[in-house]
Image (cartoon, rainbow over all chains, first blue to last red):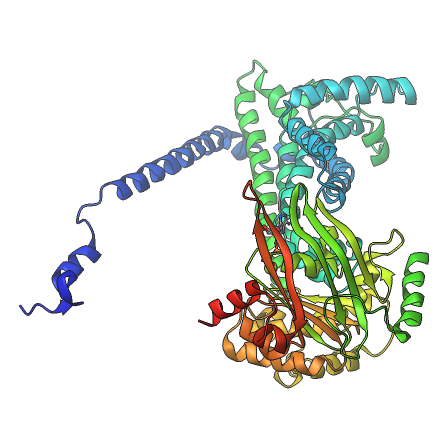
Length: 323
Length: 287
Ligand SMILES: Nc1ncnc2c1ncn2[C@@H]1O[C@H](COP(=O)(O)OP(=O)(O)O)[C@@H](O)[C@H]1O
Ligand SMILES: [Mg+2]
């Protein structure tokens, strides 16, 4: 074998030596080991999810087979063979609507103020730190807040309703819960917009609002949108705050036929899907095991559909913009 | 609104009469647009630029050169109040524009930037179409007129029209780096500014794109006043009329403060600098 010499003088190396150096150690153990460990953790968490899903789907199977869609479309009933979850689905959807209306504009506006307008002073830093703290407060605490402020103080005390345990009170409670997270996700979306883009806009004589409106928000909006929907999805599955803020805790309630939607929201009793799950899971009759599983499946399907829809919508949004 | 009117009307009056001819460089007949007197700039506690005084003259290209960190960008960004965007940046001393104190309490930085445009080191077109890049500035300034004509006229002046006239609706990001930078120059002149500030406009570009931009700068100075920061001394020597050389002083605690060393006609700075520091820097770089 011909040995070619590379370089010259005393530091000359043969091509073989160079090849050996470039090829590195033959057995590299660390890298595959790290990769394997990471893969195992990923598979473990996926496995847990699959087992959980499999468990609820299997348990709920009998109900779907016997009852079909009526489990979804029936009203609550004290008799397990007739009961359904439509009131819970309606309640959850309406709660989400209230949360969107209240927390989205407030949260986005607060984040825009903090990121784009507020000077970096000590006061701003204290504010931001406390918003982060608020996002970490357990949801049951927000439930207590909702009960004392919205149910008792505002609706029963100031508005004078007989019972303040209405959907609007629950919606306001959940809004409080997600507001801080909404602010934080929006702040992060705004922070990801490059400073060079703002400079370009200010550089041609745009005002702060023109800069935000025409350049910063369009770039940040897919991330704001995704973050908001994921936050709302979290609120959709919350039960603890609603237990306190007055969602109905019974296997049966009904508003009179033909009640307008405004009174359903403002003054009638309400329930939500997570509350129905909680409720049914505590019933002694064996029928409720399958019913509970069916309600969980319904909740998961709604969440999955919403999340998938969000991702598709975000991709569409991003494609419509010119990069 | 009142501050805007005020700035606008005084500009017109003062532009006619040449300002007082202070500064280190002798006047070459054209009048001073900017007068910088005893400028000190701080970033919070950090003293970035100390006691700088110089005049910028109309329809000239003024180059700011010096080692990195000597405050060239900082000084440049004082001329259109871009430093206002940085938290903790503080400007002391006097910067006048056509005799008006730029940092006067009633001056609106937005109005300043409509007259003093800027081109940045890294090309930063808006993530929109070429057309939108040009019309954004005039539109937000409330300009009324034919935008199609404006786009053509501006791109012709920026020597970009022939290359992009068939793809005005394409994304600005489809252009090459050099074309993007010329688009940024076009965007800066679309608002019909008085001055264009350029912060190392060619540092991210190849020699051919750089050559094009230098040619464009020479063309543009007939209509605009240009202040350009560059770390490329050949570029300063090639394009500029005047050169300001900045250096860095290192203090006892290692703090680095920028200082203006010499400001003169470019030929003089490069052939017969009056300061030893300037000569060392220039010859050091030229080898
Ligand atoms: N936004 C900022 N915050 C803090 N320090 C800064 C900022 N911008 C620049 N500086 C500092 O000010 C000094 C001058 O910077 P700059 O004007 O960018 O220098 P040049 O453009 O000559 O390289 C440098 O020491 C730099 O670190
Ligand atoms: Mg710089």
